[in-house]
Image (tube, rainbow, N blue to C red; front, side, top):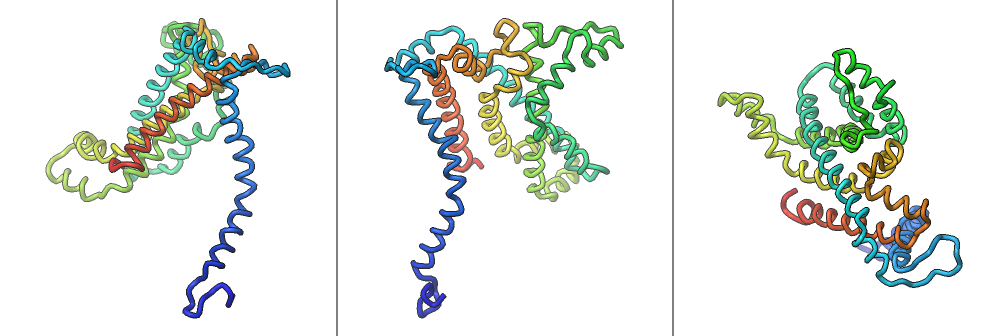
Length: 303
């Protein structure tokens, strides 16, 4: 230890080098896994988007930007983009509104609120594929519990996942259900940071609970709302497994999101170069959304 400290007792550069070496050795397995399974495939996808390859042929011809030309002149891409945007808007703002109301309700001193919080958060940690399978049975037009319950009050339920007018809405319901718990947790954390004196002063002035929510809670929760909005759009643009399990893009491409289009071209049509260009397009959209989040949260004064 004497070699690692100076005469004045302060730590020497040798000590910091030793600490850095130990930290690197401990982090190396995680860095290796991240590099092999995340960073390298991401860069390889960018490179592959300029080639035409079926995944098996030893010949990988260079095609330049032809994959991108095909992508941006393909009506299927714009349909998938529109479907993804609609899904993102519905799920993001639907979960925001319901998550806020649940958080406000559970922020009070009520009996069993811890249990309620756990129950609302369970969908967040439930595997998406398992959730999709269960909800697919719930939406079954003949034997599903939803239409069965509607029949008790003399309402003829729609075909849900098999109806082009209801399919995307049905999948969005599940997306909202999956995200409510996350929004609730973020809003609860933000609410607990608000001084109770503000509420007491407002009640003394005669404000109702609705006025307190509208004039105090919602404005003070705006940083959390911005964070949840940006992350909601990012998560929604990455959707694949839920749609794949529930509708596989049908009926008539009404739920054909970008992730499903990428999967279909890459692993069904074996157009890996074209699929990589789709991945790069999705990456570009997510990069813009991430930049907006950084600009208005960590990188700016709003958060």
